[in-house]
Image (cartoon, rainbow, N blue to C red):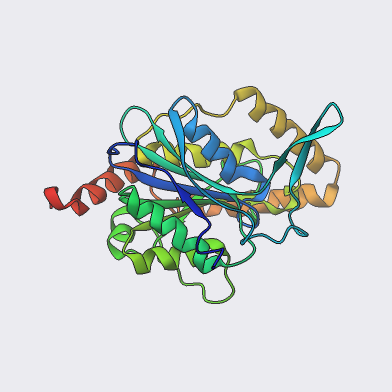
Length: 289
């Protein structure tokens, strides 16, 4: 028996038809610096009805010496073990239905793992897939984080003003997933927010807010938004860290000058993206072509 191939548990019999579904993916790990991507997806599902429809068993895909399971103890007894599984939930609200994929980045059998996500996307009729990530970059914490995007779909790239991937070399699970989606004929977009590389060990609600805003507009759904007090709190903490180091202060000033020089957005506004994304999806539907 191929345990990896049999690891997908899917239960959609009672689900009923979905409204223009799009799958949105954020995985904890290498492509989620500061937890910004997974944090944005939490906001995306807030206030919407949600039901888990699929899960990928952890055993075939994880090295538990690298990512340990967590136990819970009640009255001296182990009552639960949390394994780093991948879960897929249908999130419903006004307008578009979402298939929200969360979990930890797997260590093993990436091709099979990616195939499982494609299976779910096909079974639920997802019109497109959006992967969301956060990466350490040379950007200042004093400016609004820029969200950049790419797609291998030429029509999506043209309509949304996105770049086409040009990097060749070692990749992560998101790169493998993008290739698998391409082969399956499912349009896919990758959105990424930059995290100041000198503050990677802290939280970044400003980056969460930037991703959340783009996702909200692109997908046409309402979100909860980042708490203003949380934004102010972490901005103050970040400023204190920088102010305590003269060399770091000078470095941030240099990053600010470079950021301002390149102020022209590398990606269209969230509102423009949303309109173009919806038009693209509408054109792909057989009954509206």
